[in-house]
Structure formats: C-alpha cells, structure tokens
Length: 287
Image (cartoon, rainbow, N blue to C red; front, side):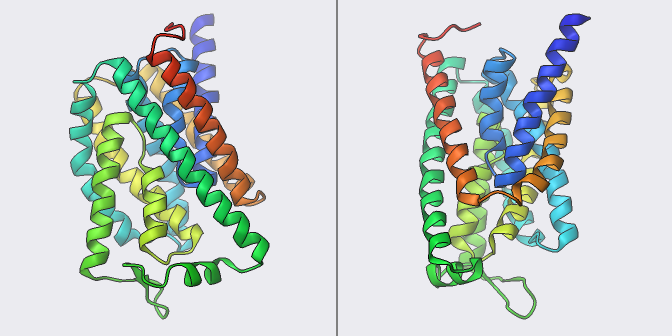
C-alpha cells in the first residue's frame, strides 16, 4: 500500500508539471511527458507514450473548452487539423509497436532537440519584439503579410481557401503521426504551423492548438487502448495531475514573459533529450 501511494503520488506530481507546461505554452506538454514517465516512473517508451498522450489529451480538452468560452478558439481550423490527425494517429501507434524501445527513445530525443532549437529561435524573436515595443497584432501584421489563412477583420474567422485548407491538413497529418508514434500531442508542430500559416493572435494560436491536441489525442488513445498498451493504474493519476496543473498554469502563465517561458522549456527539453540519448545508447542505467 505504501508503494502504491508513493508511485501514484509521484504520477500526480509529474502530471502536474505536464499540465503547467501545456497551459503556458500551448505545446510541449506531450514532448516533456514521456521523458518524465521514462525517468520518473521507469516506464518503457511503449507504455510511457500512451500515458503521456492520455494526460495531454485530458488537459488540452479542458484548455480548449476554456478557450472556446473566451471566444478565442478557431474551432473549424482545429476540427480540420484534428480530424486529419485522428486518421493518422493509429498508424503512428502501429509503428511504435514495430520499433524496439532504444531506437524509439533515440528518435524521441532527436525530436526534442529539434523542438528546443525551434523554441529558442521563437524566444529570440519574441524578445526582439518586446524590446521594439510593438503590440502582438502589429508584430504579426508586419512579419506575415502573405499567410495562407487570414482572419476576416469583420467576423474574426478565417477566410477559407485551398492553400489554407492544404496547410492545415498537412499540419494535422504530421501531428497525428507523431502523436501515435511518440505519445506527443503534436502541439510543438501545431503552434509553429499556425503561427507560420495564419495571422492569428498568440492567445488564439494556443487555444486552437489545444483544441487540435484534444482531437488528435483521442485517435492515439483509442488506438493504444485497443492494443491494450495503456497501464491505467499509472495513467489515471498522471492524467489527473495534468488537469490540475493546467488549471494552475492558466493563472501563472499570464504573469510571466512569453519568451522567458520558451527559453526555460527549451533548456528542459535539451536536458531531457541528452538523458534519453544516453539511456538509448546504454550509457545510462536502464532501470
């Protein structure tokens, strides 16, 4: 009983960290959930991935609902990206069961490195924008005049066209595949893609990303449950902690500078990637 309490208490705590990151960045919760489960609870990648996806899906669903209540969730765009992602997530789950644990861990570490470098690049851009004194809308308008998905100034909705639909569908395809394969929500793909292909304000980008993550996670969770790959005894407390962390992070994130959060997340991601690569190579104790 003491062991059960200790393990589940740790799962709740680690899940809370995931929820905090997800609330403050709109991405990154899933990318950090798997290393936490691998090192914190000693789980193999094949079990850590679906647990991380479940936790991210629960927390993202709550965040998306709050964004919808505030009117900043672009639900049609989220629906398109999410439905394509749901269709490709089961393929990722199937691939995850064909790849041995160590190569899968190494692949995840490389994705972490790529995400960290991209996050640091966005943090530098955000810091320059803050020093320049321009508002968020001004920065977006100046930096991305030719985006595929533009908002109608009168209605605040996307002006739909083929390039926009193609860009959003491609985002869903990549995020869904990585979601099923690595147990990530895909936010590290969705947030940069929405920023690159649309003129959405940052708060709307984050809310829409959470909506997509919710849908994509459903596809991966369903496929993992079908394969019997989710250890529910660890998954449920971890997911509950993620939901609590997201609620806490909603208030904290508003008080902190965005580029500082991105820098901190990038450094944590690089550390996790280094540890995963060491473990995949056999240089770090496997547990």
